[in-house]
Image 1 (spheres, one colour):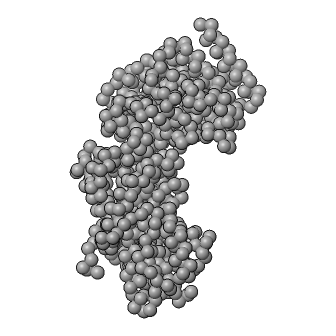
Image 2: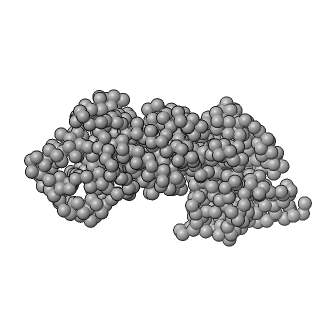
Image 3: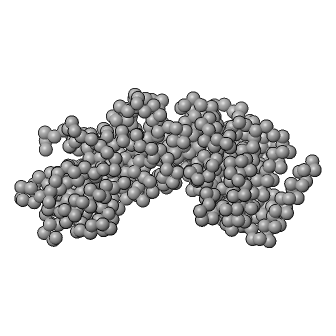
Length: 315
Length: 283
């Protein structure tokens, strides 16, 4: 893997904000004293007047974003996923979700790859929390290329969007000329017949790696990238499940309420097949390097490969 | 456009707004009359005199904005809006009914004239911050008003917002605290006292106006004039009001924070307000 370029999705997010700043003059970027970490500092450097640091006050920041949107601005409120979805949940729900305002939330440092900061900052619950808010769109890009596309799509969409980015540098897997992004549409990355792996975020790369290994053993895995967790592309997932009869979900998030939960809900109602959920197994994380944690929690290519093999033995 | 009414006329309107509050809450068989009535004069002054608005064009871009941070006093806001012509006064009794657009707490998608959904305390002032900031960023001169309860300011978010408004010198923002002295569990000084309120806002870099009688239209007029003339910092008006003002058996009674009058009580309340109205007509 060493020859593959690695970029953190938060880096791509910050760059994208700065890139689109000119074309979207109504965009205002808010931060809560984390501009250097969330990378909104890249936007701030180019558009200092349109970058508002709210201080360490995430609840107020979400309300400010709501108010700004009601004056025609496109606010992008940014902080760590833990604080955007956790601390400010009720502000996001009541001040942004309920009135369905045109606010974009740029949540960085999601998941276990926060690394050394440890469990207090490793948010493995944000997708679950945001999914419960009616009308909330949730985007979780798989790499830097997709992160940029997510930002563009969110800016072009009228309504609340939660965008999820990571801290650690991760492989760039979508760097190809024919790459395109459509909000709400899953991407068929690899067709197969024995098992479907539905992955999101940085687990897409792990799923592809696992599928390659499985193929060498004669197991044909279909890999779907779900960058839009809500609204979920149920049709694509259901059709694939109908074909393979077995589904594995893979995400850097709790196995409760995230992509795994969403896929199970969709399949239970229209195509009930056995499902194996790969993610954080209802535990808190811990300090360590992102790379070491990904391996320990079984979220790397090897981890996904092993889980799929075990799953296929059972069903 | 802004209003141009004499004080007596505003008092008459405020009395009509009170009738609408009592009627709405009676019709709903639930709701919050106490804090709606204490703020009725402020609602009336804002919608009939102070704000640059157009009921025929509720979304007018250049309009002044109002955020009811103490969203439970929706009956007060709805009655002011209805009396101002945003929607029929006859609809007020549908408050809180299934299928009515008059939701228990303000909902901007459904109620004409409502600038922000609210109800969960402490959040409206942040949205008002955002609107005031939006005006500044766009070089527009509309003003933003937000009404908070004195119990509401126990919420930490209020002080996050106050810090931001003071720091950003949002002089197009007016925060009004309806200091009627009571919250659900009792007198505010007996629950978890937020006093001194004025000194707190001063410390957060607000220009503070102590409005001695927030149910006196002349004093309200003077306070908003002073706020309008204040430059370089946001204004906080601490309005000392009487909970339940205008309805004899509700005045100063914490029980009437969130309770609807029954049919008998409704008659007494309306008779009280009729008497006040008649007295105003003889002036």
